[in-house]
Structure formats: structure tokens, C-alpha cells
Length: 231
Image (tube, rainbow, N blue to C red):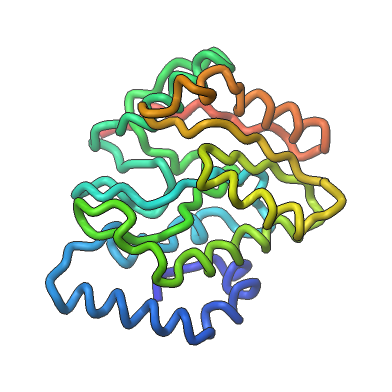
């Protein structure tokens, strides 16, 4: 299995040992045996849970499927590796970041710097067939990632959940059930995709709202400015 930080492995061991995960592994093995291209590569499938330890999570940004184009997905929601063209949804995220905090749009879409500050860049489904959005839904990933969300929500430290679009917003009940005292901040808006960004994502100010909440609760602020990459 791909790497998970030990804090996540401890929290999720019951899920990792559950029959549905064995079924999911068998499904992915069958895809590989059939010669189907699956993204991200297996080594990157749990990258978000490798870079961002459970006890370091301050923010959760919840995506849906990984990108389904060659070379795009690498295990962090909305992120692409250096040198890969910035996808439209991420372009809109950068537009909102600039409008919200005045941070100029980055020249790349590599969000690892966010992950290393405690921003859990999680998709609800962690694999996809090439060119086939939603092709790996319903195979077990959702149960696993619900357990990830629940593990964050059950922690005493207040965190921020950025729920963009109806699919992500559907997890608000899961968060509320895990933390009925309302200690976490949920910032919900439209999805940043070109189809919906103008209907409620632009102007939602998720980055400043996040930093204000974190600062108020003694958890510091996220530096949302991405570093310049050297080639």
C-alpha cells in the first residue's frame, strides 16, 4: 500500500483492514490487469495523507474525483504537478485568492506547500480511469474518505472545512455529527468549476475567512502564497 503518515494509519487501521478495502484493492488490480490507465499512480493515491498528518490538519479542502487527464492527478485535490497546465477550476481558485487576499495568481498549480501547512487536500474518491470522470465512484473510496473527514472532525482542535459545491456540502452532516458542539468552521459555496464559479464561488472569501477563524482559535494562519518553483 502507498504511504500514509503513521498518525493516519493509526486512526484508519480499522478501515484499512475492512473487507470493503480488500474489494477496492481487487477492483483496482482488475483495472490494471485490463490495461486501463488509472490516475493518480498508485504511489500517489494517498499523498494527501502522507504530507498532512492528522494532528497537523487545520483546513480541509474537499474535492471530488482526481483529474482524469494524463499527468495531472498526484494525490492532492485540485493540485497538479509543476509543468502541468493549470486546470480551469484551479484557475478560478487562484482568481478568488487574488480577490480575497491580494495574492497574485501563481504561475503553477502545485499545491504541496499548502498541504505541508496543514491543509488536507482530499478528494472523496482517490482514483479514476483516464478520460472518465466519476468512473471509480461507488467502489468503496467514499466510505474510506468519510472516515478521514470524521477523524478530523472528532479532534478537539477547531478546524476549517471548505466545502465547494453540492457534493462537498453533503458532508456537512458528517462533520456536525462528529462535532455536535460546532467547534469547527464550515465555509460552503459553489464549486470553483467554470460551470458554477460565478454563481457563488467568486466573492465567497474562503481564504480570509479561514485565516480569521484559525487566528481566533490560536491555530495560526495559512500562508496561501505559493512559492516560486525553480526548474
